[in-house]
Image (cartoon, rainbow, N blue to C red; front, side, top):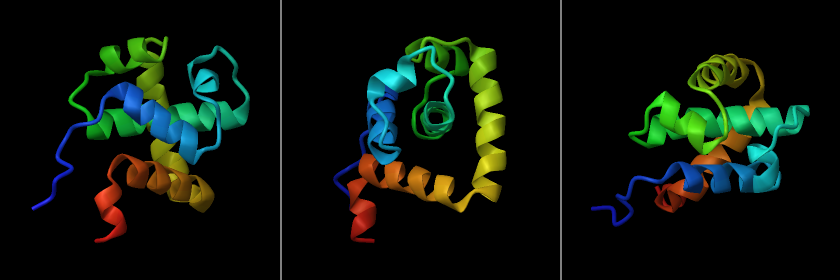
Length: 105
Protein backbone atom coordinates (compact mmCIF):
# COMPACT_ATOMS: atom_id res chain seq x y z
CA UNK A 1 0.00 0.00 0.00
CA UNK A 2 1.28 3.45 -0.87
CA UNK A 3 2.15 5.88 1.91
CA UNK A 4 1.79 8.94 -0.34
CA UNK A 5 -2.00 9.24 -0.41
CA UNK A 6 -2.20 12.94 0.35
CA UNK A 7 -4.01 15.14 -2.11
CA UNK A 8 -1.68 17.98 -3.12
CA UNK A 9 -2.74 21.57 -2.68
CA UNK A 10 -2.89 23.98 -5.60
CA UNK A 11 0.18 25.67 -4.11
CA UNK A 12 2.09 22.35 -4.11
CA UNK A 13 1.08 21.77 -7.73
CA UNK A 14 2.33 25.24 -8.63
CA UNK A 15 5.66 24.57 -6.90
CA UNK A 16 6.10 21.21 -8.65
CA UNK A 17 5.27 22.69 -12.06
CA UNK A 18 7.65 25.60 -11.45
CA UNK A 19 10.41 23.10 -10.74
CA UNK A 20 9.58 20.83 -13.70
CA UNK A 21 9.37 23.76 -16.12
CA UNK A 22 12.38 25.52 -14.60
CA UNK A 23 10.36 28.69 -14.04
CA UNK A 24 10.28 30.70 -10.82
CA UNK A 25 7.02 30.29 -8.91
CA UNK A 26 6.61 34.06 -9.03
CA UNK A 27 6.49 33.87 -12.86
CA UNK A 28 3.57 31.45 -12.75
CA UNK A 29 1.68 33.86 -10.53
CA UNK A 30 2.68 36.99 -12.43
CA UNK A 31 0.79 38.89 -15.11
CA UNK A 32 3.57 38.22 -17.63
CA UNK A 33 2.57 36.39 -20.78
CA UNK A 34 5.84 35.06 -22.16
CA UNK A 35 5.48 31.58 -23.59
CA UNK A 36 7.45 29.63 -20.97
CA UNK A 37 5.43 31.06 -18.09
CA UNK A 38 2.14 30.60 -19.93
CA UNK A 39 2.90 26.95 -20.71
CA UNK A 40 3.86 26.28 -17.09
CA UNK A 41 0.74 28.09 -15.90
CA UNK A 42 -1.49 25.98 -18.16
CA UNK A 43 0.17 22.81 -16.90
CA UNK A 44 -0.39 23.92 -13.30
CA UNK A 45 -4.05 24.61 -14.03
CA UNK A 46 -4.51 21.16 -15.58
CA UNK A 47 -2.66 19.30 -12.83
CA UNK A 48 -4.54 21.26 -10.16
CA UNK A 49 -7.81 20.23 -11.76
CA UNK A 50 -6.68 16.61 -12.09
CA UNK A 51 -4.96 16.12 -8.73
CA UNK A 52 -6.94 18.31 -6.34
CA UNK A 53 -10.64 18.45 -5.53
CA UNK A 54 -10.65 22.21 -6.17
CA UNK A 55 -13.11 23.91 -8.52
CA UNK A 56 -12.10 26.11 -11.44
CA UNK A 57 -12.87 29.32 -9.51
CA UNK A 58 -10.72 28.18 -6.57
CA UNK A 59 -7.85 27.18 -8.88
CA UNK A 60 -8.16 30.50 -10.68
CA UNK A 61 -8.08 32.51 -7.45
CA UNK A 62 -4.98 30.61 -6.29
CA UNK A 63 -3.26 31.77 -9.49
CA UNK A 64 -4.70 35.28 -9.53
CA UNK A 65 -6.94 34.47 -12.47
CA UNK A 66 -10.58 34.02 -13.38
CA UNK A 67 -12.22 30.59 -13.76
CA UNK A 68 -12.72 31.22 -17.49
CA UNK A 69 -8.97 31.70 -17.84
CA UNK A 70 -8.47 28.31 -16.16
CA UNK A 71 -10.97 26.74 -18.55
CA UNK A 72 -9.07 28.19 -21.52
CA UNK A 73 -5.79 26.94 -20.02
CA UNK A 74 -7.21 23.42 -19.72
CA UNK A 75 -8.18 23.42 -23.40
CA UNK A 76 -4.78 24.66 -24.52
CA UNK A 77 -3.10 22.10 -22.23
CA UNK A 78 -5.03 19.22 -23.81
CA UNK A 79 -4.01 20.25 -27.32
CA UNK A 80 -0.39 20.81 -26.33
CA UNK A 81 -0.17 17.40 -24.61
CA UNK A 82 -1.07 15.76 -27.94
CA UNK A 83 1.28 17.84 -30.08
CA UNK A 84 4.31 18.74 -27.97
CA UNK A 85 6.35 15.84 -26.53
CA UNK A 86 8.65 18.20 -24.63
CA UNK A 87 5.70 19.81 -22.89
CA UNK A 88 4.23 16.40 -22.09
CA UNK A 89 7.56 15.31 -20.59
CA UNK A 90 7.68 18.38 -18.33
CA UNK A 91 4.11 17.70 -17.19
CA UNK A 92 5.08 14.09 -16.44
CA UNK A 93 8.05 15.37 -14.43
CA UNK A 94 5.73 17.61 -12.39
CA UNK A 95 3.48 14.60 -11.70
CA UNK A 96 6.52 12.65 -10.51
CA UNK A 97 7.53 15.49 -8.19
CA UNK A 98 4.02 15.47 -6.71
CA UNK A 99 3.89 11.69 -6.46
CA UNK A 100 7.44 10.40 -5.88
CA UNK A 101 6.43 6.73 -5.52
CA UNK A 102 5.92 6.61 -9.28
CA UNK A 103 9.71 6.51 -9.54
CA UNK A 104 9.72 3.00 -8.07
CA UNK A 105 6.64 1.77 -9.94
